[in-house]
Length: 155
Image (cartoon, rainbow, N blue to C red):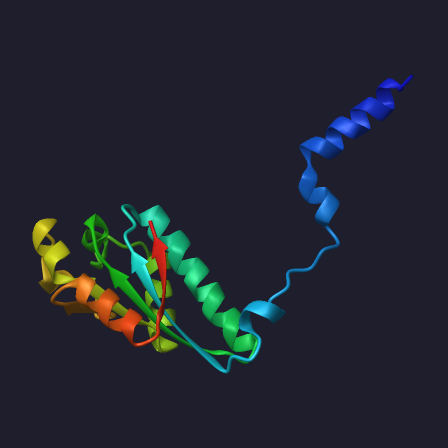
């Protein structure tokens, strides 16, 4: 009834669904329509350098994309959890340091939770200059959410 070639083609199409959407373009018109600015705080709880770099890349891409769409982003990245140990020059690779510098230059604020620094035995003296030490990361999340910042969790 079906030739082996037709069956093989059908299996290929099922195995490769992204090929079916190659012509579809991403739409941002609904999400950002009517906005001239947007405020967001990223609740950053990444445990390792690889995830940190991945998240910083996505944050940078999001920042640049919003600017290109005419939306002025106001972004804060609040670090808490064991990832606060990554916020030293010794722990970061060159790509991570460059991402921190670029984002800071674009107005993104970085905060490190003092409670997490104490619990995870990270010395605040070693923090990179782009990161500000705050007393408690929960204060930041509570305060900025109450000031209208959207919260995005990054694990």
